[in-house]
Image (cartoon, rainbow, N blue to C red; front, side):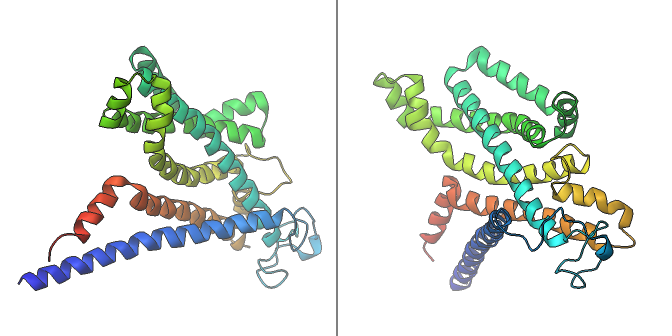
Length: 296
């Protein structure tokens, strides 16, 4: 009976390792492909994405171009490539700004505690009460729709996300023995936060960045769908979806292609985040090591 149990444990362990690697490999590979396409669109596209050819409008895939044309005769493949750059650049910029500001706020709150921590949490509650779409609509009234509006709206929502996660993980780090030892020898709270706390919570921040990138891409698509993203004629996946509503019955590929791109992009970021979490999470790594060293 013991060998059977041991074999089943080995099989489960191998299945776990394979699934962990597959999430990282598949998600990372697709994200790398999207980044390559986005960068390529800066120097080359099959046709200028804003070029209209009315005579070739609403051509299905492979009839004129690889992915066909839209209602103005614009090449869908070229628009998808440029839209990939616009979506990813906004998402990356927003998560970078929100992640940096939120992480700084969370780490400092864990070091200072008291009134500052309470005020930060209440501010996070206020921001969470306003969805990103509503925030973007209010910002659009002042700034006008555009790239900056989308970045600010998404980053504003990302700040409390990273602040809460960083605060929770930093508070755990402050209770560790190495932090207590650093405090005992007279290190300042700032020095402890930079030298000891931040390096030990960086893995959680990295995992959260990859997950929030998927959410940022989805939010940017929603903003563009509502006309609050990059101004036309610059293509985005969200605006392509909005423009395709009128032609769903006549040309369904106009909605299917950008919708599929958004869904796969978000899924890839989530898979990448899951893979990184399994690898970078110390508790998960310890659990796997214990399983590997468990006697049969």
